[in-house]
Length: 361
Ligand code: PLP
Ligand code: COI
Image (cartoon, rainbow, N blue to C red):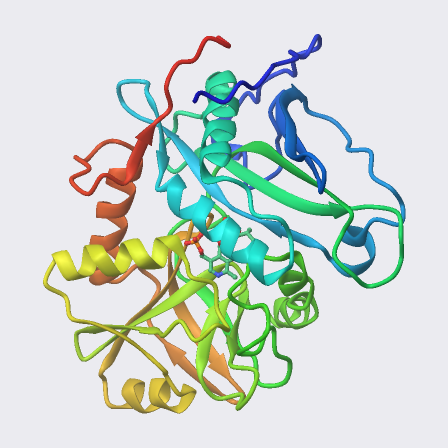
């Protein structure tokens, strides 16, 4: 059955940006947003699209006090024929519900999630930018609302989606970034909330990333929270290394996010005949492989970051230098992935979902 999503249009549309290349990431928001509410009696209800604007929540809401929150990050791309394509949105919807389960938030029917995303992107299709490297970034979010301060599951919930026309996450595009491997603070632990896309994980990362920033690093690479030894992920991306021609990435131990870009890159690499390993990677292995000349590339993968080459890794007093240009494996994967996402290369894997033109237009 089709899900009906009433639309209240804005009466004061915003002026559009004048230069797509200076959008940056997550700075500009479109005219409308999607909202639905949840309570135990009615479940998810009142799905609607309304003008973008502030939410009314109770000051005692669990989201404000106990971080009852999860989110997703996904993108809509303008294809050369002007159709708008979503990249593997079913995967984001499934992960939203895995995060919901971990954080004791109510799951949202995948059909409702996809219908909400399609209806909103359809309405905002003029906001999807055209330039190379740009897209409409979508931020589906689920928060716990209510009016009691005891630590427990929330009484009510709100699911909303906002859209942000965006460029590259890192201002330097695909120029390699400098990464500090953190040896003191940890972000998540196995058994903790690392596999969930929940705001508290990001809050926990800020101190170390601020300190790293002061020393000239772009991001922090986290080690596992138990032994402080195994490579995990960067704040907004999974990590991959080319060691002896093998693409090696940390296994999904529960401490890291199950990245959809990660999953897609592994599939593309296998398709290219590049051997792939998902396993524990002790930090000292990176240094011994580097000293032996076997570590040739490192890069991050993520929706916002796409493929982000790592030019330098610093750990305690030591550093690994991997050059100032993207390496050949990362380049090949970047071209294939962005080609499919932007609709410039054929999508033989069924990863793209074209946004239908609905009656709301
Ligand atoms: N790890 C973290 C902590 C992230 O925030 C992200 C971004 O979403 C990723 C990994 C990459 O995940 P995905 O490729 O699904 O965007
Ligand atoms: C994404 O890539 O979608 C993310 O969620 C990264 C974000 C935290 C900036």
